[in-house]
Image 1 (tube, helix red, strand yellow):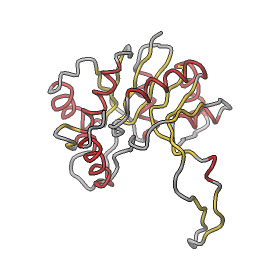
Image 2: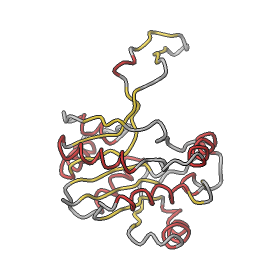
Image 3: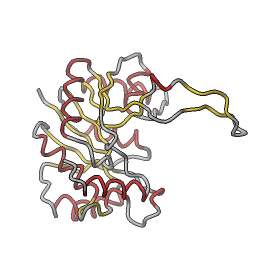
Image 4: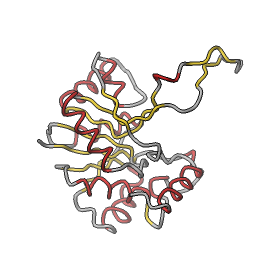
Length: 228
């Protein structure tokens, strides 16, 4: 069975308030992307790994990530305007495969176990996504910032990546989404939009998305405490 990985890191990271995109910021002495790519390479199950980046970052990434750390297994692809566009560029660039694993480049604390369990679930159910149960109380509000109601959180999940799909399924979902001019908040929502079922896979609360300086500090602390 051929399994490909598409790692998406084309964002500009404006909320980080840094001149350098967040995927290239230092985390425990290495770029954030180094931690993510290394985790996927260590899995030793991918027929190819594609890294989708912003056009303006291509040269920097090639020199300071791919060549510097000898990630010879990784191929760079230029992304699009929005995340969905970038993922699609990555999907179209890979060779036909059985499964494709889509992951956010700044979720650098993902474990090999979560990656492999998501892949195993996708083999069985065609679509599987990493997630954790919501811990906070969730409320909906109106435009005047008054509470409308409190949502029962027992069935609520916070969605992460990796998200793994049968290649034919996700390509069909993306094609149909563009036909309908639909942009989802994640890859699974495109499959859901056409009636597909998606399996939830228990992940880890450590698998945070590096978005702000606080997230970077949390990731530093997790690594310092010996996360593997």
